[in-house]
Length: 112
Image (cartoon, rainbow, N blue to C red; front, side, top):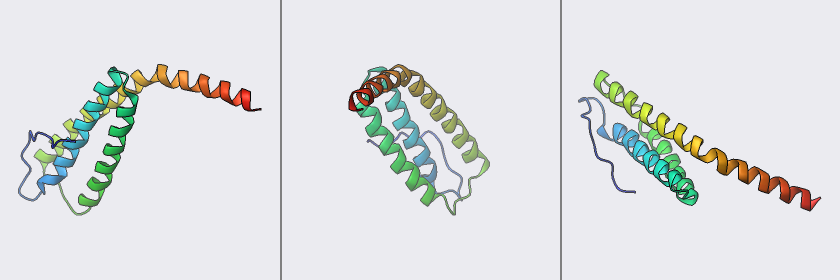
């Protein structure tokens, strides 16, 4: 995954990498939307794994960091975009998940 484009400035007390993590997660979630729109579910899963790694790294890096008001606003905007992306991915995945459920139900019937 390429490095995210940074569209904010962090306060003097905030390590810039904290918001960089949020931006990287946002970028990955946007890429997940594009992959879901294209029906490339393997890429969605791969990017979801990348998000999980980033979230883990963010949790570790953010333990001691305090965000100033500007950084909190930037974080809030980023989080809102991530949630919108997540909702779209879920919407796009619903038919695929239904097909998977039906396929798995059919396999379970053949096993018993």
